[in-house]
Length: 224
Image (cartoon, rainbow, N blue to C red; front, side):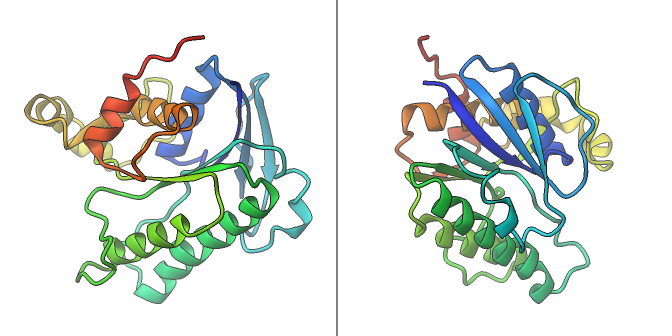
């Protein structure tokens, strides 16, 4: 099986890392980046669809049709945001995009990058965790072949990445310590990307993947 994949968030740290992993992977045939701004990267597998407003997708239906999976890596930080604004850019935007690609690709698998400590009950005190949990729950009710909610913790970027969060340099020294202490706290972005690809190829049985699940799934060896 060869995968044709839609990927959002290619200009962010997680999205760029997952994109590079897809371009290197022999079972990924094509990647369509859906970006608001141009990503200066060229590859034989790669195509780009520039969408200035993710709430206005009707004119891009043809470009968004014919895909096996969507890796939704786009997102915003909740720092400095009030809940209505964060909800619009997290819950509303993600669901609008997901509903569109679900209608165009009925056999699609949708993967959403959420975060460690996301609140599935939707009732907790932490605003971002509550909104992310609501987003995860709503996605699972859409008519996809499967939905996987990825909850990574600290992530180590791929060496070739250009879009690395500025704050990473302040805690990058923690990565090897956390990785040595526990499999439940840290992953490489390569592992996140491999786990995304593998989840689609093997129809992974769990819908929520915590850090340990991500790291284990990344090790899955698939025969050609």
